[in-house]
Image (cartoon, rainbow, N blue to C red; front, side):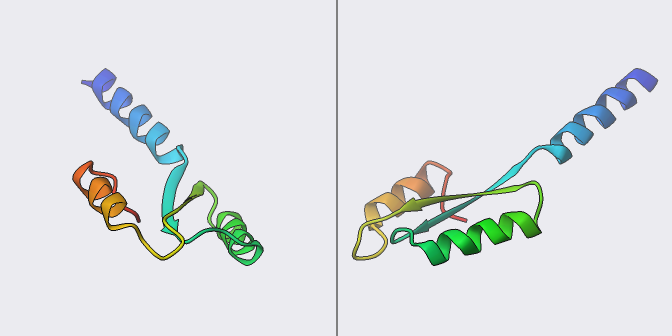
Length: 75
């Protein structure tokens, strides 16, 4: 029983220390957005912000529906 408890504790500790990702879908990037995202990462250690752009006219409905259906919607 102790081995199982130790294994679970090690697993949870490793999972807690892993970087977490925040995926942001938007219209593209600029210096202001990049600076804000980097500042967020500095203020929140362990988080990595990933940006992906949609179409230039706004969010592409097909991309959004595909992400939702695939279990990977924007955060």
